[in-house]
Image 1 (spheres, rainbow, N blue to C red):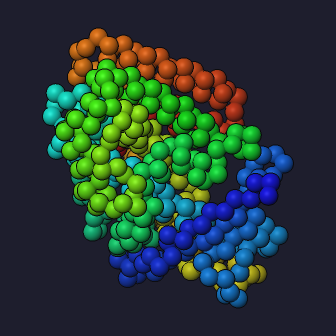
Image 2: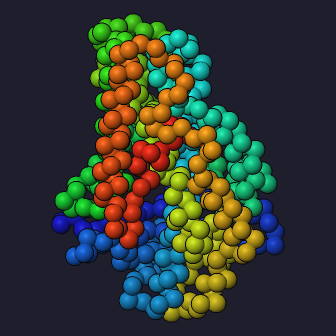
Image 3: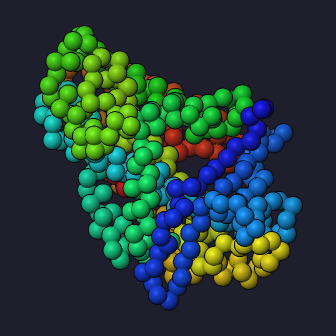
Amino acid sequence: QQGNIFIVDYELLDGVDANKTDPCTIQYLAAPICLLYKNLENKIVPIAIQLGQKPGPDNPIFLPSDATYDWLLAKIWVRSSDFHIHQTVTHLLRTHLVSEVFSIAMFRQLPAVHPLFKLLVPHMRFTIAINTKAREQLICECGLFDKANATGGGGHVQMVQKAMKDLTYNSLCFPEEIKAKGMDSKEDIPYYYYRDDGIKVWEAVKSFAEDVIHIYYESDEVVCEDVELQAFVKDIYVYGMRGVKASGFPKAIRTREKLAEYLTVIIFTTSAQHAAVNFGQYDWCSWIPNAPPTMRRPPPTEKGTVTIEQIVESLPDRGRSCWHLGAVWALSQFQDNELFLGMYPDEHFVEKPVKEAMAKFRKNLDEIVNAITERNKNKKLPYYYLSPDRIPNSVAV
């Protein structure tokens, strides 16, 4: 009733096949449910973990009051499951693959002289190329997923297929997604910097999109009559979302207000959202017990039996750990020629009003950078992943 209890349900992993590509190593997945509690210090901590979806005598609820190693292994299992959801759904599907949908539709439907092409093309830089590389090296047969992750060997494909039902337009609207998760109250959850910084960046991007739209579209009627814009929107709906009405993606856009939101979704997803979920991977996943890419023993089915030896035997072996470390390190690096949010060295626009809108956008972003820098001073755990000077324009790694 007071809003202090949170639930994290990894139901998506239920029924996903574990990696069987290495006959010498049996690998395991779990679909846990974790209860979290916001304590008097406003810290959110785990208070109960069930490692399977169906309650029963062989699926106990682990508690902090249980034996030390029981509780530790239960938390490790949750972190492993969280890693799989993060990499395959939050990262791969909801930034890389979605951004590719936007990119292909843009190149297919918008001519290079169209103002929306000029607006969006900096945010599609290298995206198709990096996704092609991922298909060749990461998610392919004998790729990194097969070598290091329990979701390799096809499990990651099953996850993406299952997660598509939750890939909705509203879930890509940052403020709506935060509200839907019940995480929008700064009073109730005061230290949620992903939310706070994300809202600021979202509003800055939306303001920029509105400024550009009002330069080229004098009215809603002009939006409706732009056949190339409508073809772009329809392409995303038909080919990207497979024409599924439940996705909530529009088949057409009729107003300037809706167009501004739509473009904000695209720019925010390809820049800020990807930065938030990508560039912290080494920080959070390089300590293997905090993000095990696979588990070599099944989840415990009773209390009081876990030993430190069992925990070590459950964690990935050195080979898989090395593959994992190399991947999260490489993915967390900026490119040598990185272009960050608001940087537009290629002059696609020559009109003075648009250049003024760009200058206003950069000014707003600079103010956000300064606010985040000031907040992070003297913090033991600073949050900087959504600082605009660390947000690349596009999905480029």
